[in-house]
Image 1: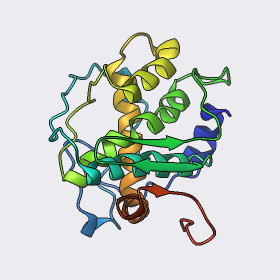
Image 2 (image 1 turned 60 degrees about the vertical axis):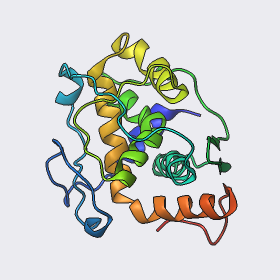
Image 3 (image 1 turned 30 degrees about the vertical axis):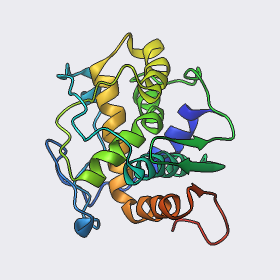
Amino acid sequence: MNLKAQAGAASDGRLTEQTRPMADATFSSRCESVNPFEYPRTAVLKRAWGWQGYHLPHGPNLGRMAFHEAGHVVALEWLGIGAKLATATQSGGLTHLPAMPTEPPTAPDPTGELTATGAAVFHAGVMAELLHAGAKWAGPIFRPMTDDYRRAEAFLSPEFGSHSSGAHAFAQLVALHILAERWHRVTHVAQCLIERGEWQPGEADTFS
């Protein structure tokens, strides 16, 4: 499975007409028709960003875990990959994939944009938590001890070097753009996880 190639195909078809500036944007599901997170420009990759901490409440929380996994599911759908299964409990969750690359493929990517776009799937869980909580994104969230951040770092570092704030910022902003644009889909998947503890794709469970 080629995340970079899928990122190129998905980003070529992105809709950017109904967007607002990305800086310090907040999200409300009532304003979903106008996406407050524009698709990031390549200049984001070159900027030195100040790392941000994770300031949402910790501890067991089924709703938070459900939206986290729903974020991964919807980002994968945007890339055209999809997930086989997602599960969530009060203390954790997992999104099962057909296959997951551990490093970027060697497709041409002179700016690094496709690599950073592919890494959005790893950051999508925390970005969904942010949107669900109505919290601001003020810069790339740095959580080096978490599996999602480590996977994003492993995917990005061959292209950008160790802990590139610009690469992680770009990936997180792509995730915010995807999820805000498809928030009703995120909410649907999360609700399935809250009610049943798992979500699986099906004929009546497609996004349009």
